[in-house]
Length: 308
Image 1: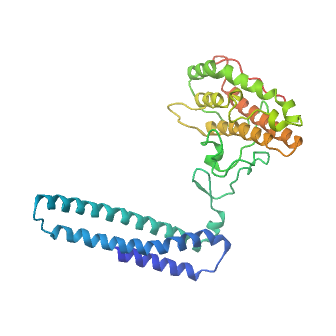
Image 2: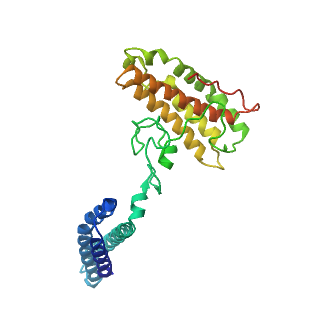
Image 3: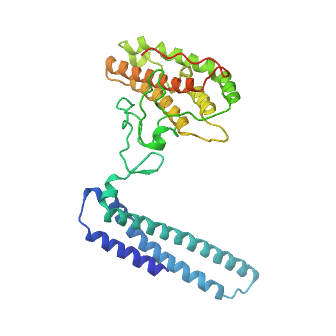
């Protein structure tokens, strides 16, 4: 079996080498080159382990202690052989995938991965879809409060939601009104305080010492970003629906508030700080607009948006 796996990998490499070099094939070529040298070593190790595990039962123990050691050794060899076999097969799949991308360069050039690892046939990026989205968001989404958000799943930014608009998202998930009522009662006052806190930072953003005047959202609870996330969890998801796309979207807006205020603190000028602060308010209003769409008379009073 190891022989045929090795033959397949060698044959795939020859086919890859016959293809002309192209920038779109860089990923496939790199994956192939870095895996082939390791693959042959793994095949040799697999063969050695197979031989040892095959001869192990032929050994005759002289004492009960020898029998115990021999049994443990045989089990270890079989376990290691199975592990190496799995690695070889996985490596073969990687090389085969690289070969497919080499034969179909159109797929290689169109393929992109989201932060969540999904392969998509479109452009991805932290500002794709919204040029005002924070440029400081990391590609792997590791510097946000809620990593499982809209960018994590789709690999793009979301547009701001205009006040009163219901065009985006197209629909809102159903959650029990009692669940929403309880959540608003529990987190509503904290969210409203966070909205007011953000609205009162305009002078700080416009000041000459904006870098120190703007509170750090990483350690300032007054922003109420986590209560906003908890409210969204109860408004946009339930035991029946699980995490919804709308919940991921609400989290993206919360993360944008966080990132935009971080950008405002690290801006090179008061003008840039004010622009980032304005984007944070747009993100806040987008979040509040989503929450208001699922607040009816049975749930409570809707949130008041910030003047932008």
